[in-house]
Length: 382
Image (cartoon, rainbow, N blue to C red; front, side):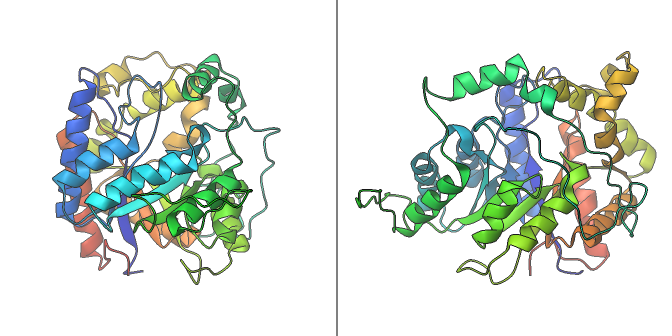
């Protein structure tokens, strides 16, 4: 397992008492520090109408960050294709690649698209889960239902503001095909008309599909022979079905001859377990704000979080995320990451960390990188 790379996923969180500009400056600084520590990738997530998140446009933040770094791969985790076109996506990343060739990962997600129909039933997995644990002890919590979020007025408003009046999102699989064709210079309309994107055509970007289950995203990634990123930090209950579904659909392609998977985890590392637990105190309240559909709040201080009057309903909303957050000393968190990698067979791990103070977030990544290397692992992919 010496070649399991580590990357970073950044939501560009806004700590309480800070501004969006502060958050953006901190994220660019963190990317510079991650490059210095040796991390393989630094990805930015896309979120909208969240008071505590400044990451609304991955392409813009990537452009700023690329100018402030030199070697670390940068990417989107993920572009929300539901309110974009294939053309706009290829044009944006084509521009980025023209200025900083060969440094970008184009991570694509379905978010913001057509509202799903009936929620998918859990898929069986080859890896047995007994009493909520895999054979190596990784926690797989009960499945969380997002139905109340999908039906919330805020989500409906977000969709209304992101889509042009009367617009309908393109089918996701078709959209991925169009992106691939535009990048390759092979796009033809149904009428046979060619389209060539400049810059964009021939861009040296690495394509990733992000998914939380073994459904459409896993199928699109597998059948297209593309890289796949599954997320344990947002949907820990479905991480096994996501990676196993992807592998079951996989067909060799010009991009890959075998499946390639990254799995994300939420971590907080400090010199000792007690300090790490204190730094992570705000996480539960922050997750609660997302799952009540009010939108991610500014990340609270430990004191602000401890002052919140928790109800049983609150705790039920966030328990799976609290139980699967890796918090502690470098050794403890590295043990848990190795466990996650073993259970999922991940080729890479993607780490996301939120603390109120920027210095604590930087230190968390530094301590983890040091411990990962001490164990003989490489932070870079083989």
